[in-house]
View (cartoon, rainbow over the protein chains, first blue to last red):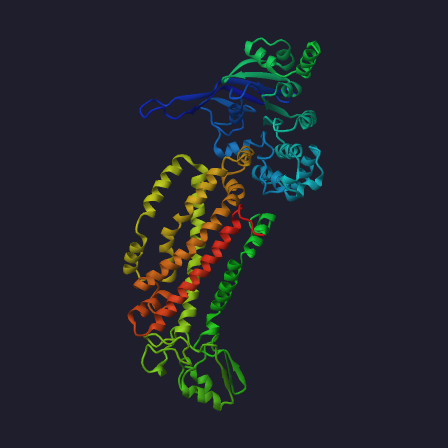
Length: 281
Length: 344
């Protein structure tokens, strides 16, 4: 499925934060969190953004989610600049893109049950839906993420971290969006649960034709789920390409360093075991 | 509504409150007095509860009956304290059931001789310097004080929460400007301002309420604003924004429940302070319209008639008991909401 405009296009995005003045008359220093980033994401594919902490990848995500207005550049979703829209227009446009956040313990209101959590985007973005339609959407979303329909009446604290992230994904799915912006969606989960959540996301992509903008510092996770990957350093994209290629033949020095610094399974243990063997008894 | 059904945490708060014996007994006593005073018309009234006359029943408290209904001469409302009328009813094979206190707050008792008169069998707490029964005035005055305090607390909570919510949620310049405005506004001497205004316009209950609301709403802004400032950065608030929920809905659904604890612990002091302000205004003669029953007016009479100590003492004890009960209750509420305090 190829349309003329890509689903998501980011053009020369700049986002700066003013810092406190060092002294009363000094000019205000500026932190340039994102400095001229451009990306494209065709419909049905997934793009990973990797980089170390503080490289600006979360700021980029928040700009794409429509939470922070960039100083320069555009975020086009379906060819429409979301920051050129009115506030109401931006809210309506959100039907097409939804978000999954890092911390499944914080991103669900502890006072609301799952039904209310899932209904919230639906009620505010598609208020014309009927009661029966909403009920069936809730069941559909719960089923999509593999939760029983009885979960609707329960509260977030009754679920484990992995289940809560499923609820968060179900909440993002309920308006039937084309794009999901996922900011570190699995990094708060146990390693054993991460794989489950990733499989679910890949499965959903296949079944529903979703696109992901997937932000993570975890290279293994990005490698598993994305088609293309962009490497960010200090607010700029230093390398971008198909995931397999970037991981197999990193061109930029920073990418090589990033890949080299990721822990490899068993490497440490083996070295220690060898050292213990070589040591005189 | 998450605010009103008893979630486990609210059940815990309620049992904490019940464990506080002073608070729960103060609440019971206060509620008893308050409910009784709500029915003041049926407890202290110069019209009988029930009259039987010539085989028919009459309820003068609820209905208007001319004197002619009981065989009198005038078309005006029957004066049930008039011996002549009572004789007429007796002649018509009738009887009269009086309320516990057969005087309203504005009934003038001509039989007491010199006013103010000391407590007697007819007037348990005596009569004031206009020959009105002190007990009756006390009941009506208590009711008006409490209703005024509660109404003002509700209104100023609503206004204060809205102002604090907007400031805390949006923050930035809006917050900065509004904070300065509130600082200036709340440093105006409100008692003088109310006195000046009520010297120009004759004050009524709602008029005074509006005037005092102008100043009392600021007391809640601080805590609500702080709660909203804290909670607007919660992940689920961010999530709701990203999911396209409107600002108003976010404030109402996600942020307000967080601010409720602060509000509930704060609002009681608005109640007590507004009762105290109303009383002081009445004492100074700038409060409720002349003739209305109020504790402040009774205090003023006590001051003007030092030879009649029952006036001052009644007013003093009524105020002291009411305020103490309220403070005990609110202390209990505050402690019950404090998560670090546990009651076994």
